[in-house]
Image (tube, rainbow, N blue to C red; front, side, top):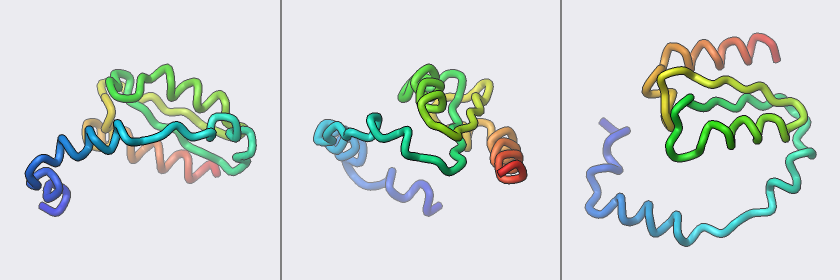
Length: 96
């Protein structure tokens, strides 16, 4: 129930939209080569919010990244395919 609580607030979607519009660009992409720790990038194969190709580019730009593309999932693969998501995390942790 607590997971859904923010969605019960009036105009939550407008607040999210306003927050998105107010967000400023960061310079993080110029610093990706400084991340040396193991990083797991997980995306759905049909993410309509952050295109899968962007996640692939991100994982390629990071020095020590692993990429998992979860089939039949969009922007929230942890909800859409929880078993595959957990397996991906378990395998990553076992190998890092």
